[in-house]
Length: 164
Length: 110
Image (cartoon, rainbow over all chains, first blue to last red):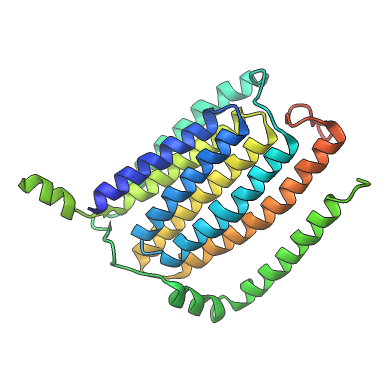
């Protein structure tokens, strides 16, 4: 069952990611990105990340993507008219990227021990485990994160003023 | 029939998750380079962050350790902060330039 679920949701994730890149209208890209995030949440569940799957759906697919869609609607962003002028850069970058993908996938396939397999339920990190680690070992980074968010709020407020 | 039961009981190799993560990351990076709409470019960055999160959680499962989940959680927090500031910057750019094309916003280029 694990293999079937993995293959189905991996296919959805890759298909939505390709759709994100190939669509010209930002709204279509945003909806594809929500598809990627939803299928990744299922894969997190298969890997035992119960808490992260919930956070992925609530924070990423919920809050962040609503922000994106809101900005797209607000700016009334249309589809891209002309193709990119950076032909040379694209022509050099895409083969390099696919080479990178090939090499990385080869390394992953050969170097990760074959005995390492993912069994559903083999390892579970629910809210208890994550919360315990977050508030003991990772307490200082957690508190620093709150300062980061405060700075982000101030930055957004300053940037959204009228005069700039 | 025996084959079907075997497939249903089989475990997913860890490398499959890592390869999926690589594929998603490369798709995100390619979109970052070929797209011209500033919002789509930003969404490609989010896609790359998600791909890295998947490999963090896969390695966390391999090591039977919760630390990968914590890293992934922090990546999500930073992505949320980044989205808030980045979209505010996009709004300001649009207000001043009335464009969303990244090629037109090149004042910082030498």
